[in-house]
Length: 386
View 1 (cartoon, rainbow, N blue to C red):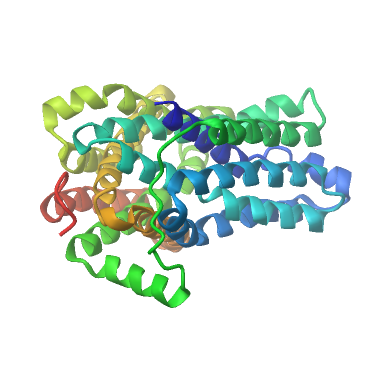
View 2: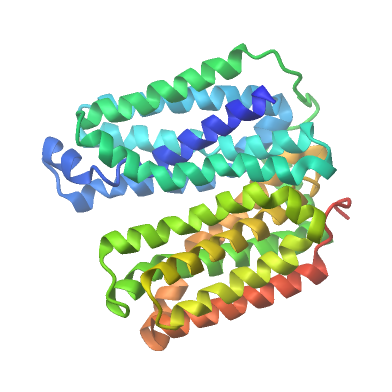
């Protein structure tokens, strides 16, 4: 469907721009006369509002129509990226970056909720996985692409190019004639919104799903930052080799998206909770064994495969968490996942001090394997929200 392709392109760009300033921090610092440690605030200025404003965009989509709000968000993201590129100083750049994160956080949840509206549940998991390929590709290529372009073009031109591409996708979405699903009776009063989130979160099935996705984010992204120092300090890998291994996580997601239809035939829609969860938990434990570097790449690829299989199954369930307020439900789901991601590295960092890298990775792996088994028992895939 053209609309899903356009939303996937917007999701790809929103993921690229999340890390677009990382590879060019020295260039930005040199031009603006500030330290790289200060320039690093640009990453937080995008990430924090990106997560927090998830809770705003979903209700706006439910009230005014998910596609309408998504169109506005994509165009707004393009404009704020251009503003980041043209900012005369670090203060205005930081402000533009904050606005980019605030607006960019709308695109992926509203895209996923739109798939929930448009695609029958028996075909929905495959569409969700393909949409997430765009997100995966953005996370894999973002830093690399920016670094390559910055070797040949001024950094401001690189950022402006991302903004222009995002604007083009937004205009394309605006030109598509599509049925939307606004609900004029959906109140945006803060008290009503809070009550609605409480009501959605209080449903037994919702509580279980939100708890699982929170723990998933905490455990997976708790150990991800420590794979690099583990490989470098314990296994003696170079940073180039580490970069290749880390990229294999996203490649595992692409492999999953290519195999999803066959997996559904073999294991059914709930297979991601059983097989994907166990794979996600057990694979990182193999990092504790010494092996040639390509072996670590294969292990991390398999870990990524397990993660995307498990998470894709949770996303499928999230599309039915509150069908009458799907945008709000997906925002709540994404927020729980984001909070888990935010807490995980801090908790893992504290454990590394006492357990070391190996002990922390092993503990997280055991926790993820257990989470897969628990999720299989407490989450129904493909039914009503309950």
